[in-house]
Amino acid sequence: MIQIAHGLVSRADLPIPEWLFGWAAAMVLVVSFVALAVLWPEPRLERERWRPLPGALGRVLASRPIEILCGAIGVLLLGVVVYAGLRGTQSSTANLAPTFIYVAFWLGLVPLSVVFGDVFKAFNPWRAIGRSVGWVASKAARGDLPAPLSYPERLGHWPATAGVFAFAVMELVVSNGDKPENLAVAALVYSALTFIAMALYGVETWIARGEAFSVYFNLFSRISPFETRDRVVGLRQPLSGLAQLKAGAGTVALLAVMIGSVTFDGASEAPIWTGIAPDIASFFGDLGLSPQRALELTFLLGLTAAILLVYGFYRLGVVGARSVGGGFTAERLARAFVHSLGPIALAYVAAHYFTLLLFQGQAMGYLISDPLGDGSDLFGTADSQIDYSLIGSDATWYWQVGFVVAGHVAALTLAHDRALALYDSAKLGVRSQYWMLAVMVGFTSLALWLLSQANA
Amino acid sequence: MGTRANPSPWQTGSLQLTYFRAAMSRTQRIALVIAALAVAVLAFVIAQPGDDDDGADQEATAPATQTQAETNTDGATEEAEPPGPPVTRIRMDNGSVVGGAKDIEVTRGDTVRIVVSSNAPDDIHLHGYDIEREVAPGQPASFRFKANAEGAFEIESHVAEDAGRDPLVARLVVQPS
Image 1 (cartoon, each protein chain N blue to C red):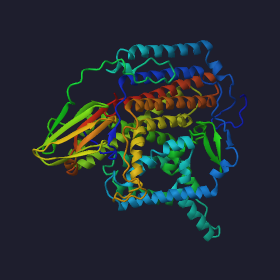
Image 2: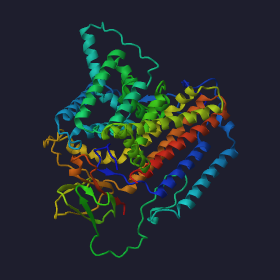
Image 3: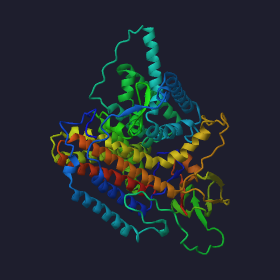
Image 4: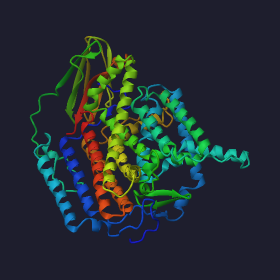
């Protein structure tokens, strides 16, 4: 049994039972067929429809004081986490940094983004610092700051993809990736890189296109009905934000990394991986690597393989969709449908990390009172505990399957809507959708299979 | 419905409004719904006899709706309780488990008893339930608790963990009742 990742976790989900797996898989096929039969004949999500929240609410929520307050909270939290990581206990469960970064931040912001929109943008510490520095610098230089470089189109989403990949490597591959000190150093290095990139390309440009966490959470926030425009919070159709996603270079890779890393995290607990990983590791060990390095290289290989598998499967669907005609290049089609993978990525994260957020998230209760793990009790909650009986396995299974099926339906809906807008010919559009449907069913079945395998 | 204010960048040329209606006849749509029904019926037939030991967990669900099967165990007859909860015994030899780490399967609500004996001093930690017991030669560690949280929880040896060896002693798997 090898387990180097998730040192935080002291509880694992039970695999979903066979009968539920069967039911869920059948349900996926049923909703797919029904969807084809009943979906609408005209695009509905492609139109931009946005209206401000009633009254002054939308204006107040996006006002300057609120923005400054949220930014200050973000900067404070970043500071506390880095300080705790460097100065606190090096036990990953007793220090604030690992649970804050891997659970409260990385997982907690996902449901917040999906429900309330791009909240991370408001709290983003790098954006807040970048904007403040920019403001001060332009005052000092009396507006004579050099204009930022224009962002190269071919970079597209590649820097964000690299950032999310690096985060996944830290979480799932690096042996000491949950050690507080290492996380603090990683946060500092990432901050430095972000500030350099912001100085080169401009704060807002880098936030919108290059900064990994902004791009990651923004993608999920596009499912939300809330969107801020011109300093006003307003409402749009749920999911329609994804249809407005400007897919460019690296966007397909980004989604592949997002889905692939969760896939690997799930599969790494399954017999398929625990069976072969020791053999691969001992092969690297024979080449002269230390056991720890051999294990890390093995996991890096597994993570990369999972991402390439997801990427390859999507490209296969695109090749199929292209074969029906229409005169589109494979690249064009790949970018045209990639936004429909958004809900699938969400379903993977939600199903896989649901209980981790629910249980390990409770650890924030005592960690905020004792961030360094030195026995302090700042808010009187240092003695609180995780209630592992909060939700039972039955309820967990239904939620997990519910997430997966809902993600499947949302993905089908988006792909269908895009096909309506993309193809001139009715028949071609429908035929292209058979291929996209096959891709979605594939991803959804994989998600269900992973749920049925974990810790089996 | 007919006009679109902001054509999306993906729209090329004029769009046929009768897109889907033209693409798929009424018969085809009905055929798809029938196919969906057929899958649902098939799933019902296949899943029915092959389900787990907890047959009462499952109820028929209408196709394409997300009816959740309720846990329903009132049909299950209670087996005669054995006197006192069974004891799982684990023997450790110099920090490694004799016979390898195994799963201890229990049902929620069970009173669990685990006794770990070892020929070397150790700290045995049941994660999640967060119970820690010391063990020494001749002084086995005894765990007794009610399994009120479902899931898989690791029981680990802190001595093995500190030494960089595989710390897994056993896994407590608590199934729903």
